[in-house]
Image (cartoon, rainbow, N blue to C red; front, side, top):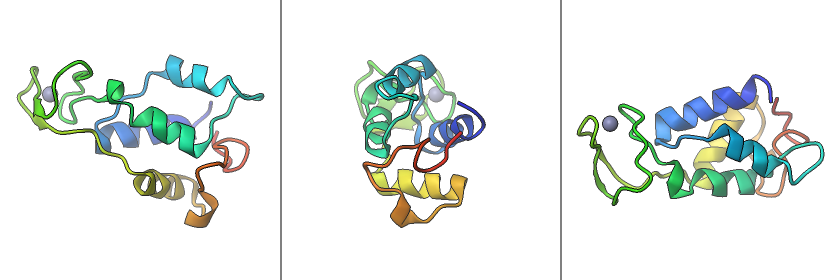
Length: 115
Ligand SMILES: [Zn+2]
């Protein structure tokens, strides 16, 4: 994975409070050769509550009841939310592609040119 992936994941962590475990994401990509993931699978991975972090201090909130307040900094949090449309918007902005290209079944690397 090259330059686009880290930027995408940083955006999502900062804006939506979703942290990504690179090893897990990489493992999910291994179902395809060469390694790749569909937009739908990526969306489902990202919206798994295990990836929820505090948007203020990045504290990992995964096992804590929701909604609540961050035990580290006190920032209130609710369910991490990232709709498919929001993910599509982020991908389009990053890659400069049209929204109609970003459908659930297309592959991030092969079809959309993520690096
Ligand atoms: Zn916090």
